[in-house]
Length: 166
Image (cartoon, rainbow, N blue to C red; front, top):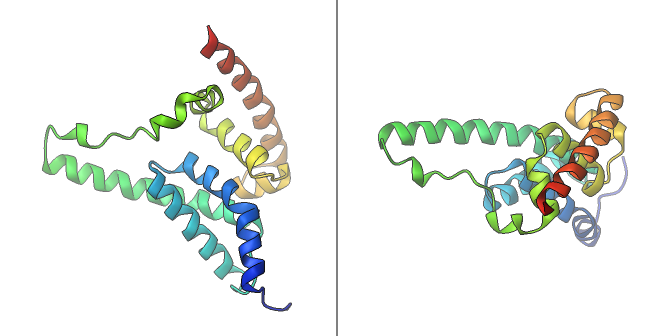
């Protein structure tokens, strides 16, 4: 076992990776607050899984966010269903749109239109800076599938970006 990471080293690690983690969390969560919570909880859980003294590998944090986002969405869906059942006709209170203000830019609009399997791989590759092997481990898919989804996703992203301008 190595030495314990200092607070300054943790801070440096967070500065290096937190923007990537938050971008991915925003793709997976239904609100900014949920995205921030998801990111923080995933970092803590990933660090605990490796002993807590040193920062976890980014791929482990992404994989943890992926799992936690699924749990969060299921929990949110159950809560929403209970609330809708309790207050019929109140479904306008539960708008699931994610940050309309971010859709102002062309690439963000196109990314939102991408199928999830492509969007997720592109986010992990471009913003998460993961290799195809790390993406494969994160999503529990073969590395060749990760590479194919990335290639097809980029093709679709180009098509959708052109659509925005026509």
